[in-house]
Every structure is written in structure tokens, then in C-alpha cells.
Image (tube, rainbow, N blue to C red; front, side, top):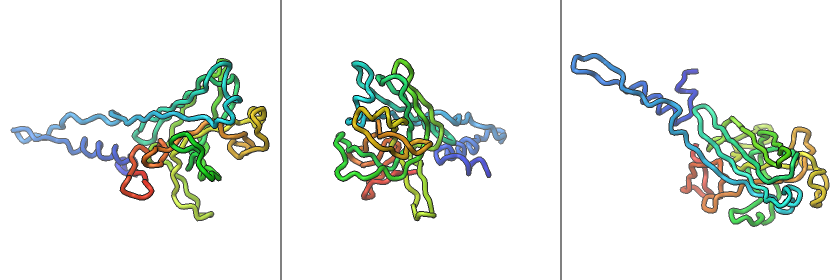
Amino acid sequence: MPLLARLRPRRTLELALALTALTVTGAGTATAAEPKPLGVHHETTEFKLFPNTPFLPCLAGNGETPRVKAEVRRGELNDTMDIELRGFKPDLDFDLFTVQRSNQQANGQPVPGFTDFGLAWYQTDLHTDHHGNGRAKIQTILLDQIFGFDPDVSLPPTNTFHVGFWFNRPSDAAACGFTGTTPFNGEHNAGPLAFITRPDATTGLGPLCTKPNTSTRPATCEA
């Protein structure tokens, strides 16, 4: 496949401009102008994840408030997300997914009548060390274009613009009243949601959409 066809749209434009940026000298000799290097001016977005409040006592380290932040950098072929956990209990394990929907509104209130998270895409495991801190890096398509589809169940292309993670062990949330299991780990016997992103108050989209199109109802994301 040609290089221009493989690069993501903004990178394709930059490369095309670099390849055609030739100037002609007075003697008629074609000389290449200084090209703009690929890989510069990557867009970066930062956002927080918020706790599933009924399970805060099972997450918080002694006298601390658990907090989670993520940074996503747009790349030429894919994106990189760094996620950082602070103030947790030590030695907890979690499973992180990108999901279609959040169970929280933009103001932090529960979504009325919430039933499920929609399409979920397993991305990485998380672990808190003996200080209660954790970190992970993901490299894949994330910003504006992350989606899945499944013709077998008539699921059309569906974006997963939210980020959330679940207790890997149901027993870690038992003291907070959790019983049963959820499918959010590799063995499909995880605990409840621990942290998740909230939608934008204006667009209703998750933070992995950085190019919202508000001319549509509901708002969509420009790839």
C-alpha cells in the first residue's frame, strides 16, 4: 500500500506538502524547500477519570483520595495514552476498556435509567504498587477514530470515546457491597466499575473525541 494511503489524514496532508514543496532557482534548477518534519505538532489531550462512588471505600488508600488522569498524544499511525493512578490502596488490579457510554453525566450525577456501557474494547491491565500508585501506556487508534463493528449482530461502526476500568477481582469490592461478577476482564469474571470518564456537557461525547461536530443531532465526531 502506498505510504500516503497508510498515513492518517493530517499526516497525509503534511507529507504531500513536503513532497511538492519545490522552488525553482533563477537558473531553472529545482531545489527542495525545507520540508516540515513529520511527527511535529502532535495534538495532545488530557482528561480525568472519576470514581464509581459506591466503591470509593474499596479504592482509597489510607487518608487519600484516589485520582486518575490520562494524556493522549496523536501519532502518525496511531496514538499513545499514558494513564496514571494515585492515592489508591496498594496491590489492586484493574482492567481498562474504552467503552461507548459512561454511567455518569457531565455533572457527575448518575445517568437516569442507565443499563449498560455499550460496545467495550479491552485495552490494558492496571496495577497499583505498594505505594498505591499505578501507570500504564496504550498505543493504538484512540483519538476521534476508535470504533468497532460486528456484522454478525448487525452492529454498525460504533465509537468508544469513553475510558473506564473495572476491579479485576470481585472480592476487592465485596466490602462495599458488591456481589456477582461482570465480564470486564480476560476471564469474564471481573468486579464492578471503579473509574470512568464523563461526557462533555455540550456535545455529550467522551474525551477521546477531540473534533466534535455539533451541526448534527446528536453531536458526532469528525474523523
